[in-house]
Image (cartoon, rainbow over all chains, first blue to last red; front, top):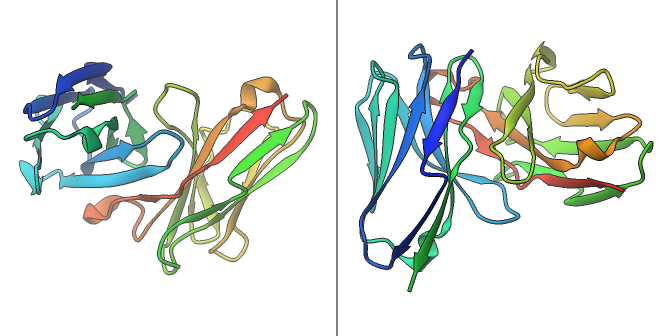
Length: 109
Length: 116
C-alpha cells in the first residue's frame, strides 16, 4: 500500500529565506508526482507535476525534484515571501492520487 | 467552464439527514475523482469515474456513501443518514486522462460539510 510522508509538518521562516520541503513515498511504481498548494478554506492549486521519467521541474521560484528509486521528492522555494504561506501537499499517482499530510508553511515579514 | 465547480460551498446537516454534493468537472475531462479531507489531514481518495463508469470505489467509507456520474460529466456524491464523523471537506478533481501520461489533476474548491 502506497504511503506518502511529508517532513516537516510545519515550518516558520523569515521572509527571503530559501527553504526545502520533503516528501517520501514507499512504492516507487508511480506515473508521476504532483505538488499542490492549499490556502485555508480553499481547494488545491497544482504547482508542479513531475513525470516518472523526469528528474525535476521548475516554475518561477519553485523547483521540484524527483528521485523515484529512493522514493523521494523535494520542493525548493527560493527567496520566500509572506504570500507563500500555505499548506503544501505532495501526491503520487500510481493508479490513483495518494497524498501526504502536508507541510504548513508560514513566512514572516 | 474554466475550472472544476463544486456546490454547495458549505453544507450544514443534522445528524441522520441525507445530503447531495455536486461536482461540475472541466469540459472534456474524462476522469473524475472524489476526495475527503478531514481537518489538518491530506485528502483521502473516495472514488474514481472514467466517463460514466465508476472504476474504483474502494475509498468509500461505508455503504452510506454513493457516487454517480450518469452522463459522464456532472457527478453527485450522496451521503445517507449523515454522522458527525462525515464532517469534512469533500473535494472533486478532474483529469484529461486519469492522471497517467503526465496529465495532472485539477481540483475544485470543495464542499465543507458539517454534521451537527
